[in-house]
Length: 211
Image (cartoon, rainbow, N blue to C red):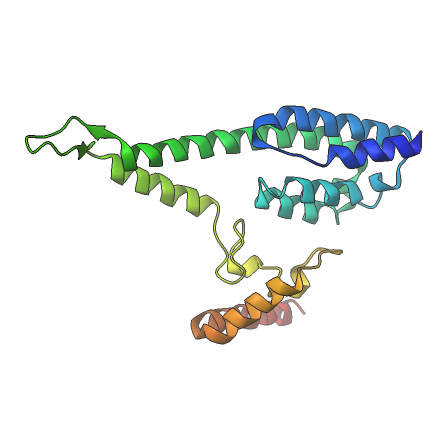
């Protein structure tokens, strides 16, 4: 029975799609309930949160980072928290998709929506749509920043795990390709390298002051 539950747990982590979020979370939640009942090893040491982080990463880099961090905190990684996590995830992903859909719709309208033709027979764009699209795009980027070093959204340079190894959660190992990409970028971009060095000096100074 434990083998069957393990298989069900593994399958529940696959196939997360934007069109079936609630169904996916329901399936994962049921698998977690069985995993607790039959005491699978995945429910201990925050493994279930790491597994969940990798499962949701295609839809949310921010929640991937959040769950990886929580996995290293005993009070957050307790497996009984899965019910709260399911509720949080269901609300967050649904909200994220609504915002994404709205933003895409606005961008589409700004680019393609047109008023009737003018006297020359050429269509003209609806007034004001372009500026609205730019504002929405800027707002979205501000809430989901893109790291200038690794290129991943959801964090700023200060919190980049690829550069600042001491900030990486236990068990997190970036790919060699990504590490090489960041090193090459630092070697070519003097301004970025200077900013990284500035952050290192500031953190070292703060550490010395606390000591």
